[in-house]
View 1 (cartoon, rainbow, N blue to C red):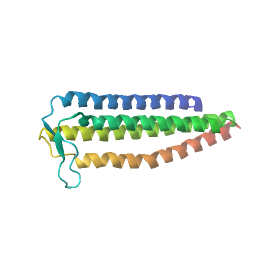
View 2: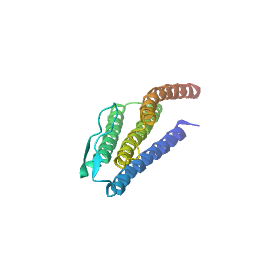
View 3: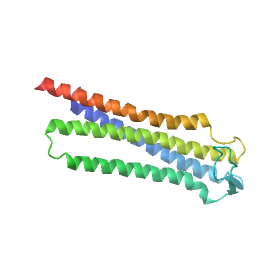
View 4: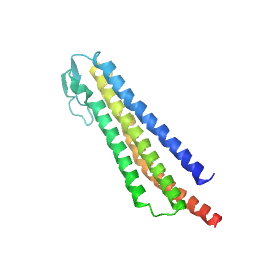
Length: 181
């Protein structure tokens, strides 16, 4: 597969990951609005992570702080990936076409990583929100710790995976360039 086809495939993956993030963001808000009217008068504000007492308060719009934080997190990730893209494009204006293709492949790989990591952060926010709702109804005692910490573990594992993928991609491009010469 030549680098132009790989670049198009990467762009498709990036758009799918972006769409998955949008879906999770919308899901967080839908769950919040659906659950809010069904919550009891006293709701937890924070969850029991380390044995501390659960903080409860009267039901208020402060409940929407979790989907709001999820939205802000999404926007910050989106802006940072956009800034990185424009900064890198301007700094590589003088490169030849093969290097431009290579940097485009790399940028799409990095965007893929950012959006994949963001999916796991969205799942963390949704899990926190879900746990608050179930705790308010007395169904559960808090977060499912194994699931919660596993999401963070996956995020940490993705970083070296994408570093390795970037190195492999550059080596493959270099080999393809040598074969063309």
